[in-house]
Image (cartoon, rainbow, N blue to C red):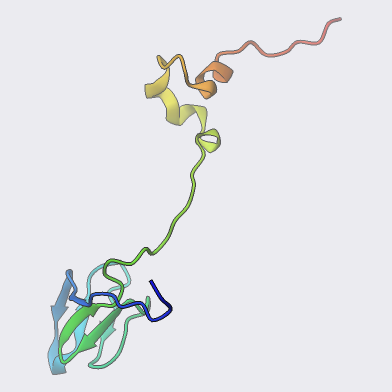
Length: 100
């Protein structure tokens, strides 16, 4: 896509209409009250004439890699039987004891 990417704008889910054309966004615990023509704290939802629209529908909002190596041994209890899991292998190794 070019620098002038066009994304679909859709009516948002999880909001309620309140007085004077304002809406309350219910997507996160912040529950922003958004007046007509304004956007919420996250700047991804906009009130247009009392209807809340999402401005980022269909857009990638984040991407990350998450290596298994950072997980703790306690979070892997269900993988104890997996012979290919390096973390379980390390978890069951005997500690190195210096020779005396």
